[in-house]
Length: 386
Image (cartoon, rainbow, N blue to C red):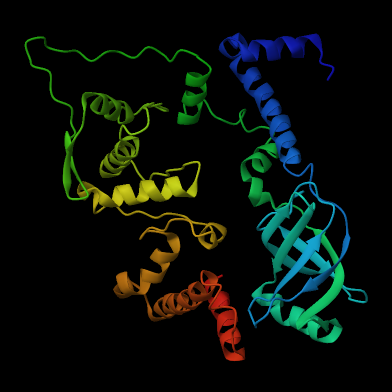
């Protein structure tokens, strides 16, 4: 890549002391926005660089049993890698003579490195279950007691939500420039890029008065046991509650990071500094954090809500009592007196539908043989919870 000398000099400064941010903050912010935009656009493109773009003629076989939504199995040959055929990806299906394609979703993939074959299972949706069933009835045939149908498949584009951070930043050219001076966001930028904060006046102290103890407890009840914070944990707790725009607390495995993080979050909420958003790199870590907070008696009145995507739910991510679908199911019981009749009916309908949906969504064996009435019930239930 050919860069102008001044751009190359700026990038060199950026990876070193970044003096330009200290001397010309607004100009540096504009350039950073452009840099982040290009970087995230590249990362978003790389996510699909090796995706399969071919339109493939395949024979789809319907597994035994009546299931809703309908499912099909097929095999792709000469595949050195999965090439984007991953669980959750959308698939376009078309048969000769059809006016339009039909959409399905990849349910599971098995890659055989020796034969270079991909065994793919796709599933329809409740809203097109009847359409796919009719296609099989009208255009399919029976082979070895299996209903099969021939057609073309093509891997759909990766949804924006699958790569949300990079997709979002790639569309925000002025993302850094619009961070206003004096905000917490700008204080974080200044801290990261080593711009000294304005000197604050130190509070006056009276040497004759004893130092007041820190304003939080040293002991907490966790899982019906009393734990006492160590010296390092107390120091970390003070750092987490010191109202810094950003704070980093490092600790080795097994030193109580999750418990300490839950205590910091709980105390911030009790100090009316909420609501708080807690993120982690995995769904399991978020579930562990939520369950840890629930186990601390001092925070039993703190309201928690864990957002869990439907894809993570179907992958059987560890559950908690505060998962969003559990909270929604409990609304008519917990807040019935605060709801009007229409709201109570809506919540009750969601609860009934969700219970039916979960019976089949997480129990494939039960969904293998569904009667027509059960299929209709499932379709209505999914509509109520979507």
